[in-house]
Image 1 (cartoon, protein in one colour):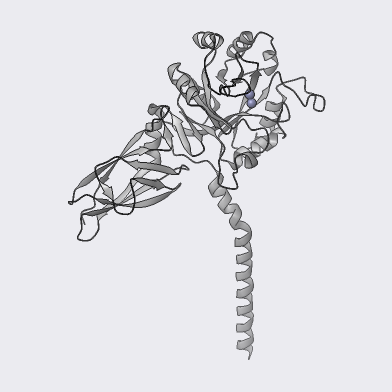
Image 2 (spheres, rainbow, N blue to C red):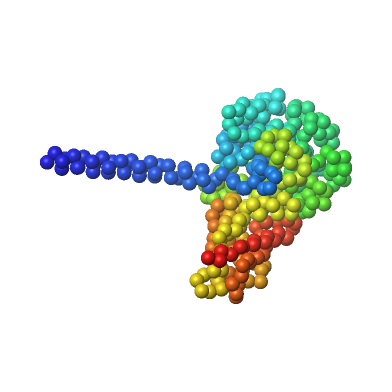
Length: 384
Ligand SMILES: [Zn+2]
Ligand SMILES: [Zn+2]
């Protein structure tokens, strides 16, 4: 009898424990899933760390809707390595409610909030003018107050005197360029030739510009992608629904502010936008190679059908078009490799080979308008 009671108590305890575990799982699962999926993750490339940077954002200190701590918390949730709160110098719609004669406050508040957190805060400001020259971000500045200058060229000069990296914001913005076509004006040509303008947004918020990409490449400007967030990133970029904020991937010698500045000035960037990677071949090539790895390959039983694994170490959902001489058994010429996972390909090689080279056009990567880079995946075949 005693044994039966003991057993009954054990069973009851077990079921309580199971229920508790279940409750814990149910409560934790969405958060675990969320933290696994929303952090922006790309692998390092040979010689450099791949840093996730969002260097154009706003708070209530200009026309944004949140206090700077929210920007810090969003960035940490998204796995961002560095942010800059680039408040408009000349546009201050909340000034009556939130007076702040010192234009460095947004940076200082964010820096204080992030002091024991793993996030780099870069001091920045948005020089906000009508066209030309339009809007530009000056980052790595020392004193935003000194950028309050009437003459726009003098403001760029002051930013540069402070050691800033300066990039042209949304050059394709229809409010300033009604045809939506990014184009240089004489003033921009002067700024570039005098070394006062170093980068250009090819991606801003939810917009992209082929013409800005061409301007970057023709004028040796750094390719930038930014969220230009004013509200909440979760709402604007549908992060709960699987979206991501646009960012600049910066290939830096180390994870420091100085190394980010050096990399930006050396134009080692790729923009990440709506599942597309946008950059020069010199940066995209190594990145794609690091993202897509080949796994094990063997022939299927007594056939000449090769079973080969492709692994994706990144957040990109790769869309590849087969441009090699072989055809596939499970796929058409278009294959998709989902983020952070691997797929099995079955390749009809007609005879048993020791190694196989596959060529793909990466349709979700852009090296120049309309051009998608090619990657070569070489499989060594397991003969056992
Ligand atoms: Zn702007
Ligand atoms: Zn802005």
